[in-house]
Length: 452
Image (cartoon, rainbow, N blue to C red; front, side, top):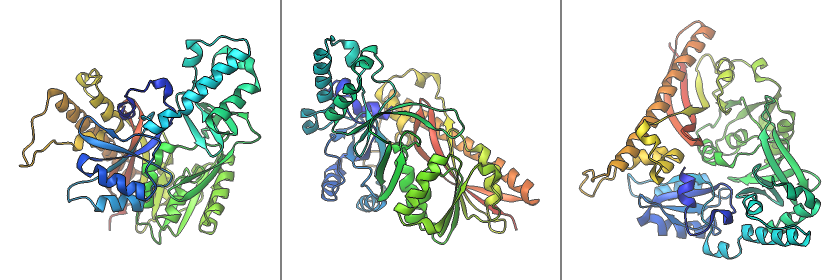
């Protein structure tokens, strides 16, 4: 994946300490200008290094919680016509030289070695391999991944283990993530290992979110879609968010996109509790009505200019109610989230090179690289480069096929509902991130209008 591309380097994987971080991708001639701007705006992530990628572009690490849509707009406007920059996220990037000197992962390993030795145990490669490779930080709480601290020896150390982990990582509370519970509300199975409660606060694009990590999910990988939502022209519109959660998209629509009113639907009572708090934290509680329960039983009709269907792996169950919610006289726009599978040709499946890994994380970037020289002629490409571009075309073609099929099915639903023909128009297809190998989180902006 693209994250693996940035994660290669002199430092051993055991020493990498970051979870997902945001990066800006730009061409090398603009990198210094971008870096100076990001430093001046205090949104450059100095804990991670700037990386030059094999295709000649440069990845600059940024602080996702501080980077705003205005920052992105100013950077893009500073570029010559035809040039742009891409915001994406990476897993396990290379720490900066300064960060490597005092790596929390190294400090954690050393302190646990001392703890095991003091308790009469023996350190081993198995124990070292069992340490976390990444984690999420929410204020003074560290959320560990499920595939760490599984060895039997850790249980023998008792509470002192988690006190040592917290000290090494500069935290006061420790929690460990498990698998998502198949309970219909996607409840996280998170265990609080140190501390009294799991409530944390997270700041994203100027919006404050609070939630209980043991009962609600928070996805840092959706930052690009949150920023895109924030830039949509929703002034004066009524929006329905069918899967509101703690307000990931509800609040950006209200604060940044200027929606007049949002109906937020959510059936997880713990997420509803967090949503109420978040609306109040951001001062928009008067412009939002929460509908708790199964949205398939929602009694609203004919109210929405837009409907957000942010459920993975598929929001298909919500399509009929979304059609019911659109204003029957004027229609509106559906923002449909979906995990779309796209399997390249067999030759691409076995390439195993970094370019293929980059495509899996950010195929739209690979497709856009036409490698044209200054005369406007396409430069020579190696067979490997051609394979990557062809794979990207296949991937985007699969997205297009899914979008067209979805548009057709929505038209049928609308015609059955209203007894007259409607038209649908694909406004935009947005790739959010790679969800799994050859599976991409896609958002389709679908315009739906009644035919006069």
